[in-house]
Each structure stands twice: as structure tokens, then as C-alpha cells.
Amino acid sequence: MSQATNQSWGGRFSEPTDAFVARFTASVSFDQRLAGQDIQGSIAHATMLARVGVLSDEERDAIIDGLTEIQGEIERGEFEWSVPLEDVHMNIEARLTQKIGITGKKLHTGRSRNDQVATDIRLFMRDAIDSIDAELMRLREGMIGLAEREADTIMPGFTHLQTAQPVTFGHHLLAWQEMLARDHERLLDTRKRVNVMPLGAAALAGTTYPIDRHVTAELLGFSRPAENSLDAVSDRDFAIEFASFASILLMHLSRMSEELVLWTSAQFDFIDLPDRFCTGSSIMPQKKNPDVPELVRGKTGRVYGHLMSLLTLMKSQPLAYNKDNQEDKEPLFDTVDTVLDCLKAFADMVPAIEPKKESMFEAARRGFSTATDLADYLVRRGVAFRDAHEIVGQSVAFGLKEKKDLSEMTLEELQQFSDTIEADVFEVLTLEGSVAARNHIGGTAPDQVRAAASRALEALKAHREAP
Image 1 (cartoon, rainbow, N blue to C red):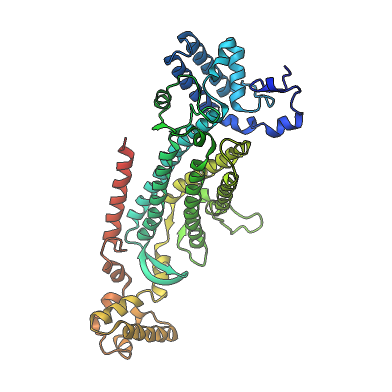
Image 2 (cartoon, rainbow, N blue to C red):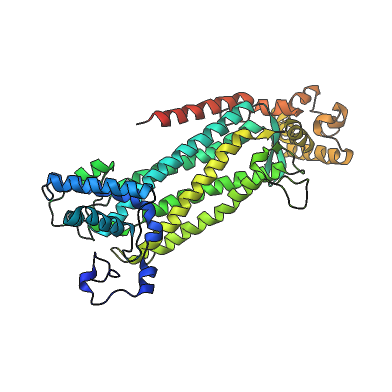
């Protein structure tokens, strides 16, 4: 048989595959990344085959020893990958047969490349999710720690990017943390559906050999074998679900990035990012560009594209396996790499954010951010809310004309809009009084921020200690 004809299926063919078609259909250039998972799955498969009597113990041991040696060759960069052998599976099997002879060909008994690759991808995804879980933990811990430290730091809260009400910087950071907490839940939920084993589904209908899929699932740490062989080899919804998680996560990181970019500008001047997370300009020596958050914001579109690619890949496929599914790996691999890189960047950067407290405070003081507090004060004194709204609006208009914040007006100036206002009004017009008054769960009061940070850290601790 010509070496250009893949040994796993060449018996049916009378001529070798065209050289271009061989390159076009091969996946080994990228799926060799699954080598570790492929060997892991093959060792478990051989162990199971010996346990049910399909392989002898000697054959099992020879296969496992050979695969272990091949793993070493790959790790040392000594393994020679072959395009004519198409993919990671056949490259490893061919090398195994070279090393141990005909026993190497017995490894494929009771399985197909269809269930083999589906298993490899799930093993890869499980490892990737665990790595992402760890980086998310690190980011959230750093974010919560910064929020706790800045529980008293006052800044303007915005709606429509207009100053709305004063909040604390710690409260704002915990809003970010809540986004990430939901993302974390989505990731862990996705892992449950990833952790189902396709191996044993074979090409599409199962196998006539007396395999024990529960044994293999236990050896590989899967929660259970897949229930249906057709579905097991043909769907990639677990990859789509992961890409969906990744898209939502990057959307949240992008929103955070947008705020970091704004806050570092001279116009906001709210924070400083350490130099190691920024770059300069080739012609403007004064520039300090927030490149890390800008890049994370930019990479969001890349991950969105991978989600659309995977959705489109699956949308018209009949059961069961189709060659289309070879196209699942590159977007999936890049999504994993992008998510890990972005999380690492944020986990390193966020705890190092340096708030410019005076700038934040002045910005909150300039924008009539305690206007709602004045309205609430009037309502507590019996004024209908709509009337209170009108009174405060008139007060703000006066302040704009006189270039005075509400807290800077005299009592007489405020009383010209309502004689209900008395001297105690200034207790609610200060920024400190405004944030302290919102002293309920979910509120921006410093004590509530510290309590929320403590609860968030306890939740992370419980996750870390969970089995």
C-alpha cells in the first residue's frame, strides 16, 4: 500500500489520495495539540479491553508502555508528525505499531476515530475549564480584595455616562465581581455537560465487542458514558456552550476594559495603571496607553466570531459524524487560549489599580450627584415625589447658573425653592452622607461593601474546598 494512503482506511481504495487533498483534509497540523488526551484515552481503552478479555494482559502492558514512550517523544519534541496519516490519532497509532508490532493495531478494537476524537476534545475541554476556573478564582479574589480596601473611596456613579449618584469605588468593583461570579457559575455548569464520555460509541452505532464503558468512564474521570451512540459522536453543543460562556465572559471583561480606558484618560483621571500594563507612543512622548484593557476589549470580537463559527458549523449537519467537525478545533483552541490570556492579564492588573481618590471625589461633587438625596429628604418631610422632583430640578438649574453644587448652596438659597428645607438638609447633601445612607444589602454604604466582599470571599473559599 502506498504511504500516501492512510493505513486506517486504505484497503477500500485503488489509488492514493491526491497530495493536495491529503493536505486539505489533514488535521494533524492543529489536532496534535490533543496528543496528551489521545494517549490518556487510549491507555484507558486498552485497560478496559484487557479487563473484558479482548486484549491479554501482555498486550495491554505493551500498548501502555509504548504509548508512554510516545508521550515522552512528543514532550521532548522528537516525534515526527506525518500529514499523510491525517490526524493525531493515526500518527500515534502508526508510531505505536512501529514500536510494538501488530499488537499496536489491536488498540483500535471496539472504537472509531469518531468517538476517539469526541473523547479527546472533551478531555481537553475539561482540562481547559479547570485552568480557566483557577484564573477566574485569582481574578475574583484580587478584585474583591481591592474592593474591600476601597470601600470608603467615593466616586460618581453613572447612568448614560452622566453623573447620577455617588457610590464607592469598592461598590463599583463588586459590581464587576458579580458579573464574574455569574460567568463562573456558567463555566462550572458547562463542565458538567463536557464531562460525559463518548468513547465506546464507535463510528455511530456502538460496537459488537463486549466493552464496559463504565470502566473506561471511571478510568478517565468522566461522570458517565454518553447514553446514545449517534449523539455521542456527532454533536458539539458542549463546545458551543463553552464558546457562549467565553463570549459572555469577554463581554463583561470588555465592559470593564472600557471603563478602565475611560478612567485612565486625562478627562476622567480616576485611576492609574502601573507602567507594566501600558505602552507609550512612538512620536508622542507624553502618552501612556492602556494597551492591556484595549486588547482585551478588542479580543472580544474574536471570541464572538468563534461562537458564530461553531454554531454555523453545526447548523445543517445530519446525524451522525461529518467531516465538517474537523473545523471545530481551531476556533475552540483559540477561544481557550484567548480566554486564559485575558483572564491572566486581568488577574495580574486589577489588584494593581491605583485609584486617584481626590479626582474621584471631586468628580462626584461636581455633578449634582446628591440631587436624589435632596428629593428623598423632601419626600420624608411630606412632599409628594413628583413635587420634590420639580423642586430639586429648580435647585439644580440654579446651581448650574451660579456654578454651585447643592452642598455649596446656602440654606437661604435652597429655601427659595421650598420652605420645607431646613438646616439638617446638609447632612444628606454631603457625598459621605449620601453613600452611608444606602446601608442595606446591595447598597453602596462602606459597611455594606465590606460585608459583601466578605460574603464573596467566603463563596470562593467554599468553591475551592468543594470536592
